Amino acid sequence: MGKFSNSRISTNTFLTDNTSLHAATHSSPDRSSIINNILNSKINRITDNPFTFFNGMSITEVTFYNINKEFTTLDESLDNTFNFIGPASGLRFDKINGVILYGLGRMELDIDQTEWGPEANPIEGECYLPPNTFTPYQESYFTINYITQNTGKLFFFRVTGVNIDTFINGNNYWKISYKLECVDEDINPQVINEYQFLASNIGYGGNLVDSDAYAIQQILSEVISQLKQFYCEMFFQNSTQTFVFKYGNWDSFFYDPYLIQFLIRNGIFATNDYNYIHVCQPADPPAYLDMDYYHTFFRYIEDPENTKVCYFEGYGLMVTDPLSLMSVRMEPYYMITVRDEYGAHINTNLLEPIPLFDGEMLQLIPGYRELYPDKCPCGCDELLEKIDQNRMYYKIIYNYLNGKLVNSITLKYILQICFTPCKELYYTIPILIYILQKTASNLTLDAPVTKSNVNTATLKSNTELTITN
View 1: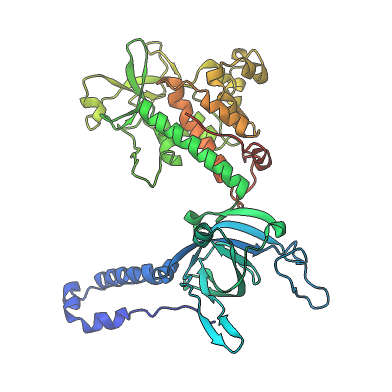
View 2: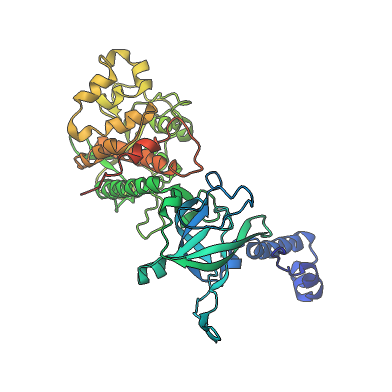
């Protein structure tokens, strides 16, 4: 099969024949080069995009039974198989739910009257599997989901041929030939593994996730959505368009630019739906923000092995930035910082230090125990046993920092949180969201195994977890 290619417009001919364009450029090689680059980039965006090939094709969701090469056995003498589905078949499959196929044509039953009576022509055709998904094999099967839902029967289409082709940008896609083989056969005894196809990852890789892990991802997604919703309700202030909390005897408003930096760096509130919040620094940030960030607990969460935490408390300085919404409000707003307006470290008895976390949480942080051993009189295990029920989520953070398992038992601790606006939740909820998002992303098949990866086997044994308000 030949390669798919697109012809390109000759921009040189276009520029030579168009005298008005030459006049506009005043024969300047720099301007002419700019125009050429713009034209080429526009053309390349069309020709190098692999999905323009699929734009005019129908989209069909199927359940794909792909050949499992490791467990499939063939007839020793013929190196083939006569039974495809059934107890005598040597074929073994990986069941992939929710696969997207392009170009699956309309199927019509064509009956001819022959000398042997009415006979139906075979139902067959061709379709396409998008690039960077998975490799289909001949003799695999698929069933069409909407047909199954409407009829209650499984119509098995056998893959009779697979051809690979390449786009201009180097991405490979597959052209699949298929034929209706049988109806309502029991293929489940031949299924080895079951996966979920992630259509949102088409073109990026990581399209397959274990079905049990996918169920865990759905649970994690629901918990993450709840945490985001509650956090915005408690701390997002429309009048200043940022996250603030009340602290002190006079209930003054504070915000932490290092926390805001953590939200921005990790896309904690990034979303594709209409519940969009633009997270940015609400005022002129403190001096050396990026440098000091690398010694905060937030950076320690991002990279536990290579971060030395130095800042466990900060000071409140009034926001005086004339361009900030905070400076035009009736009530004063304060910024949590470790430096004054001149960039020097704050070291004075005139300002009261503000601990970023409570004492029990700080004692669970390895860096804090090293700096202040006298403030950690007991072991962490003993401390965790004494924590209040509504703060049992500390165990999730502690387990993450120590490479322990994140499972459904610890997830239930989140449901025990007493969601009331306070400094403690202002800092810890974004950290919990980050840990859960990283846990969910590490459940994909191609995720590397790292110290902080979730233990999938443990999660599989705890899929009974349900989330309730």
